Amino acid sequence: MNKLDLMLQEWLNVAKWAPSGGNAQPWLIQYETIESNPNTVRLELSIDKDYKLIHSPLDAHGAAAWLSIGCLKLNLIEIAKEYLYEYTHEEIFFGTNYWTSKLSLFFKLNPGKSLQENSNYHRDDFLNRRTNRNRFSQKPIPQNDFEELKKICETTDSIHYKVFQNNEKKEFVANIIPLEKIRWSNLDYLKGLLFEIEYKYPNHPASQTKIPVDQLGLNTFDQFFFKKLNKSPWLQNILIKYLYPLILQKSLVGFSNHCDKIFILQARSNSAADILMLGYTFQNLWLQINKKGIGFQPLGTPLVALGYWTQIEQVKFTSEQAKSVENTTDLFLKKYNIDLKLPTMAFRLGYITKEHGQAPRKNIFIQKI
Ligand SMILES: Cc1cc2nc3c(=O)[nH]c(=O)nc-3n(C[C@H](O)[C@H](O)[C@H](O)COP(=O)(O)O)c2cc1C
Image 1 (cartoon, protein in one colour):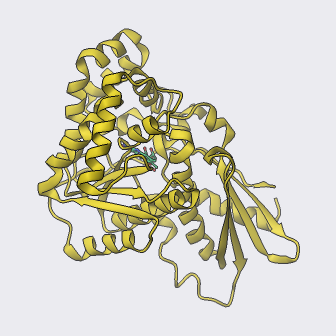
Image 2 (spheres, protein in one colour):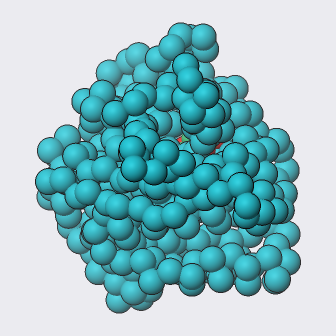
Image 3 (cartoon, helix red, strand yellow):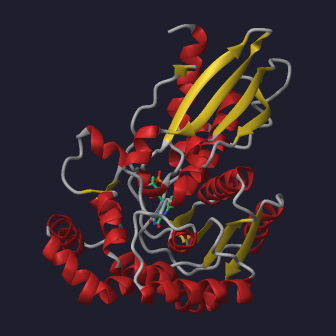
């Protein structure tokens, strides 16, 4: 490895701690130097072809993976500053869809500028950011912190957001529950969900792109149930027919009861630029929130609606499920001006009551184009 390779490898070792749906880490990162300007580096970020073959049904046509690339972009821009490389601009190549799209980030060596001093984050912030699926306290976060978060959401026209305060969370559950119900009562979604969990082989390479079962915020009995569920098609059928209301109670009601606020963020359009910005803003909010000692957990449930409207092939919706997505989409648009036909994420936040383990990561190796 030459000096540049070594440096870029160090960037990746930090940037890889970006979040991704199901911890799939769907990215491929390559680079080239620009001959006419030896102090310039172009990093090319795209969706890994292997990931496309096994992607979650929640990842409609790669929109969620592309969103994660927006998260990764922020990490790269910030970590580059530590090495005196300034992000100058970017170019998006939009292929026929997100699967074939590419993002080029351009960096220039700039030793004169005090980039490190202007850095918004320290490398530990990327390592310490995490999904916390345990209960949060309902203690309100300080108003000035909340205002700061709103400002981040408002710095871009690419996204639209809505906040549900503590006393509005019940309303959020009532409105989103039809989509969460589909996540647990449709076998295609259930299988996707079970695939994202690591049940047994903590040291197996495949487990580096999954979520450990003991990090789901579940008690020992529920973890045991999930292990059994993963292996037993019979139990899966019982769940989607009869038992799913019990899980809904734990997953969504637990999610919303035990926190201070819930945010919904939505890309203004399906364009690659807006979804990238959704990911970038999502990651910026997440880092800021965690830096303040406040917990964060995303909820990808709105992506069920995106899958329905963009007609993903992996899922067969029953007519009842189709009706329920259509009604929920109508309601969100009329009540909150949130369009579930566009990529949308929710998250809860609140003070942490229990620390959370770090999800594993695969190593990403720097590759020259
Ligand atoms: C698009 C997207 C969707 C996600 N959906 C959920 C979700 O529905 N529930 C959840 O607990 N975590 C969700 N996550 C968090 C990921 O599971 C998490 O980022 C990943 O497992 C890595 O863990 P870490 O964030 O602690 O590094 C989502 C993350 C992204 C980027």
